[in-house]
Amino acid sequence: MKAEDEEMRVIRGYKTELDLNNEQMTACLKHAGAARWAYNWGLRRYEEEYQAGRKTPNAISLHKELNALKQTELPWMYDVSKCAPQEALRDLEQAFKHFFRKVALKKEGKWKEKCGYLKFKSKKRGIGSFRLTGALHIFERAVQLPRLGKLRLKETGYIPTSGVKILYATVPEQAGRWFVSVQLEEEQTGPTLATGTAIGVDLGIKTLATLSDGSVIENPKALRSNLKKLKRLSRRHSRKQKGSRNRRKTTRKLARLHARIATIRSDALHKATSMIGAKTKPDQERPSVIVIEDLNVSGMLKNRKLSRAIADVGFAEFRRQITYKAKQAGSLIHVVSRWEPSSKRCSCCGWIDQDQTLNDRVFVCHECGYVADRDYNAARNLAALA
Image 1 (cartoon, rainbow, N blue to C red):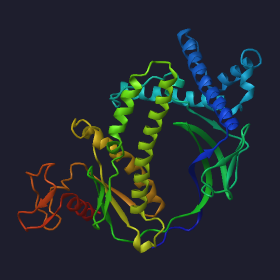
Image 2 (image 1 turned 120 degrees about the horizontal axis):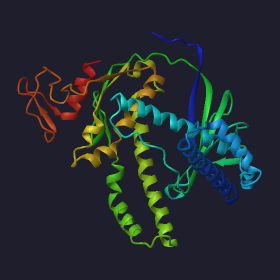
Image 3 (image 1 turned 30 degrees about the vertical axis):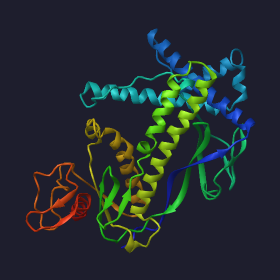
Image 4 (image 1 turned 135 degrees about the vertical axis):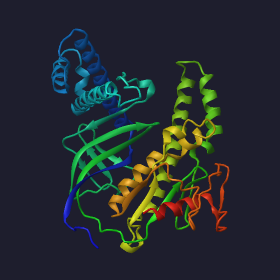
């Protein structure tokens, strides 16, 4: 059975690291600073108008007001592209829409968490990012952005250069490294439907995922393996005098370590979800249905003994990735209720062990005598629900 082979327009993002020289890095810092300043200025103007009882401004009116200030009070704004402050004001307007949406839901009793009023951006919490639109061009080894020129890429041949429409480019800074994230609209043929056997995926802490075909994906435990170094560096950072040069050096080291932990976790999740989806394999080798559990992650994080290990896995990010990658591979996603006793039910006869606890890592059936790893038994039960 084949899906429709007609061309369709899809929007995809490509993120890769930039290889900047000192002059280009200074220009990027100016753009990020202009975007941060415009966001804070717009938030301040919004609060002034609100407290005065007047109509609150939108992104267009704020940008017109900002353009008038450039000629008198803000001549340094001419050193950066007009897109950086303009897109920052649009982000501000969108953030207010989300805030008021949460307020409305909270009045109806549909939102239990904090609404999260907008905060001023501080350079102490990070350089930030800026977004550019307009004349954008992508080459095999570089990307050309307005007012910044050609910026070399560390990874060549990753971003497609032909048959795509460039929507915008975002340049973020993370622990001293600069990246570019390009949003492209490209034509793709509809994926053919996968016809392989259904597969169950049981997520865990000891192992990242156990599949019903017997495969086991190891958990890199990014935070746990770097926890000792992280504690030592945090202790060293807290002992430095605030505002000193040594404290700034330690801050950069701490940021690089946090970025490394996040990168290790993200790399493991992408490799795991890509392996399960098997997008590049033939139709008969790709799973027709991928079955996962609807885990209550927020409730699981309340366990004080396991909260750090659970957060180190990234269950929500795994589900997000496997959902869109399964769609690209022509597979279906079936989400099983969190109340399904997949770990307690025997995958051979269906007997349920009501006395099973989290410490029981081996499942033993008292009816048919089936013995298997707890996670593998749960993965087989999930695959049977497809």
